[in-house]
Amino acid sequence: MGFGLEMRGITGPEAARRIAEALELVSLGAYGHRYPKELSGGQQQRVAVARALVVNPDVFLLDEPLSNLDAKLRQSVGMQLRDLQKSLGLTTVFVTHDQKEALMMADRLVIMRAGRVVQEGSAEQLYAAPASYFVADFLGHSNVLTGKVVPEGFLSAGGTLFRCDSAGVPADRVMILRPENLILGPAATGLPNSFEARIQSITYLGAQSEVALALPGGDLLVATHQNRTGDSLTLRVGDRIAAGCRPEAVQLLVDDMTKTN
Image (spheres, rainbow, N blue to C red):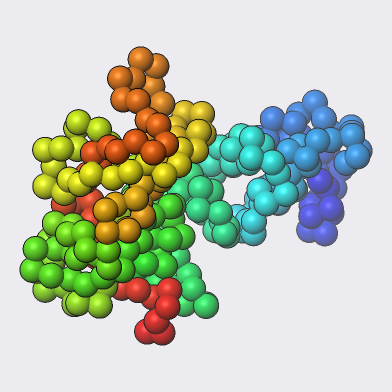
């Protein structure tokens, strides 16, 4: 903890004070006497953060700081970092390949590919309105269908028409539909985009289930269904079910995953 201070000529009581303050910032005030081997992975990660903070940096640079932690620790340490950054008002550059971390941590996201910025904005902006297939794929799961743009919207390779605003959109686009925007059951029957689907599989994930659907023409979609107590919608593999989405949920994007722009 004191190495960075020593390299800056800060020793003695002043160094001890700043070390104690930095440890308190990461909720490790009572752990200063311990050796690294006596700390958990999450505690060691917080010590690394405190070691950077103790020198009062102008900018806080974090390169994959949560990558060695398990899922539960990533969440808790990530939120501690976020709260710390906000309380200190410290400009922070946080590099990550994990889309959940990016959405959780950032005020402003910059998506890079092959060393080039492809889109920037708030987490909400980039998730709701990705500029391309690559951005949509990086920030969360998406259903992707090939086909062609038509005046009514998008006609998939399997022959399913998805109604959406396609005015002025070039023909060579792919269709992106987020799983959470697919509605299942009776609520789907009155939507502009409504079709009968067959349930291929159901993956239970606790708070939600991922429901794989096959459309009549062969298109495959995945829907996210929230598992609520007392839910009247029964899902069984092999059953036919109404599925649908609103036109504004359908996005027609540049296919930069297979094309070089």
